Image (tube, rainbow, N blue to C red):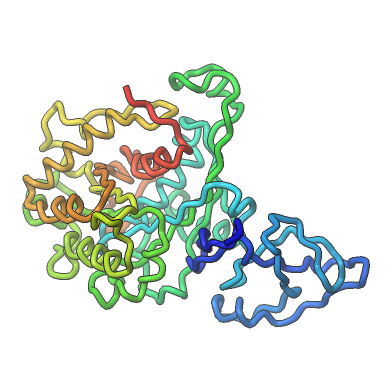
Length: 407
């Protein structure tokens, strides 16, 4: 098998596997040496978008990264598309690290708010801290993230509604391009710790975030509909709301908005069980029976229960503001969350994670820093996220995109 023939890539939109040689080019439609290609219906793309798509024709790339030369008109084009769904691939796709990340959790766990705040923080405070910048990798992401997520929360002061249920093929992931390092103010003066004095090596990554509705993951049959997506992802972030656990609800600080109690297939452990069963059946486990996909388990809304934690708990301490992922601090948080799960009758979650996943890390986060009002309003000036970026930082540190401080 020649280099590039193996199906080592996954489309960040349809999650199908293919090789570099399978990637297609789309003609630019510009006038070339032999004339100009007119637009024509792209039925493949239309089946995925649900609308009529009329675009210049596509042709094989032969595995070359680009630009391609249209065999009909002779015009050059930089546009590469997925061979399965015909969506335009992000710039540098296949040339830089790409991670397909699934955000899962029960309904009302706050995973959509978590995703929105993490991405907003990467554009602002957390991005400055890490000497990182993040931007939409396509027009769909640019428009959808601003319209449906960022603007409603940070300018409309409105808590985001739960993700609506939809078919797997009806929801395109949000795809971002992350750049870490390079020359910048923080890097030049070293204000955020060691390792960023002067110019640093630039590291790039393409992140595709898939956010299914909680209802779509509450039963074995629902999860089956997302088999292709979950089997293709590189990493899983499972967001659990501790306020859905009976032993924790009575501990919440006064005035906290409590989510609906999670029971049966809605329970956090049931969601993890369903996902784990799916991955095992789809052959994702190694020879030792462990699933190789890193699993980040984040307890959300930790601000509501911080007052009952010991003064020395790492979940009551401010995280270090460094340019790297603090492994020692993360392990302290991991041990604390594991202890709390066992104390709060969440031992089945810990047992499932340890028995079936090779690499698991626990996190305690708060996306808002306080409970929203009863009419679902938030105050942008009061959005004070706590440790919200750490699950993603852990995944990126394992990839080598963010440096690790091991102490």
